[in-house]
Image (cartoon, rainbow, N blue to C red; front, side):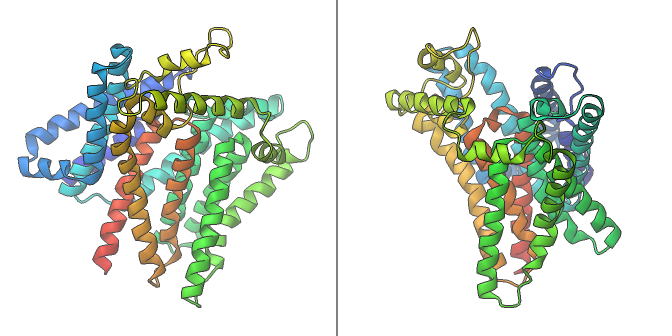
Length: 425
């Protein structure tokens, strides 16, 4: 299998996320469309050039198996779905995710995918994301002044600020890991500046789910380094400060200087306070109501659910008294609850196993890192999982093509790191 094919596909996968559209509502549809054009071409190439043995080997990958079984259950759910048409629409999105996972798995098994290329593309696309966000921020700040009500106007190349925040936060650990490739101080300064700019953008966007994610990441780093320090007295605790916490502090101070000192401007304190004391917050109240409705739905249909893509239909029953005007909520804001309500235990179990496999590989990498004298960078590759897991429980990344692309790239990366770690041993 030509390594050039693997490189071309990975590059196209990253480019597919960036859709030029005046209307942000069209962005998600455009991203799905791009992927639906790219994937069939490479699937045909695999069928023509790949051997049946190699294709079968790719299907045996645990990630492909679990998501494939989840997809099969989703297909079967059209039989008992409230609205089969809605199920078919949703199935097209899930097939794109499955085909992307399969193609990358096939290319990983049959080609030598360069981890450095993935890290470079993540770094490059983070630069693009920041260019879009900070350029929009600069224009707003110069003309009208910036405040939190305008945060969605600096979403960059994504449909809304929440997706932008997750995409930026998800990529930061990759860039930190990329630092291990360079001993050049100039390049290190550039990358650290990029990381600081990314954190600065997160403060501007002030997405609460990402604030929770970053806080958990800091606690995780402190926890694992405490264990490492206990096991290995010579561990350097300043290195994680240098790579993660130091850029975060620089970003926070920059934010305070530019925006945080004026009462009518965006306030990080107010956003953090809204997380801690959020009983009267409308979005929190709405999420809790969605969760309650999902649990009620699950209790009534625990095994099969209401059919893939049909939660939006069923939710109108539970939200009839709270729907504002004609605005119908589409999502539970929790992927796990939504899958459980749509596919029951039959579909939830394979998807839960799919997520569990990510945790399993991360656990393996953490244990190996704790028992070795390896450099500190490896542990930062667990942070994207924390960021995704929080987003999965507070939003709906399964419906967001950009986040799914980054998740699959992450799965590929940790599999490569696991193989690299085993080879070292």
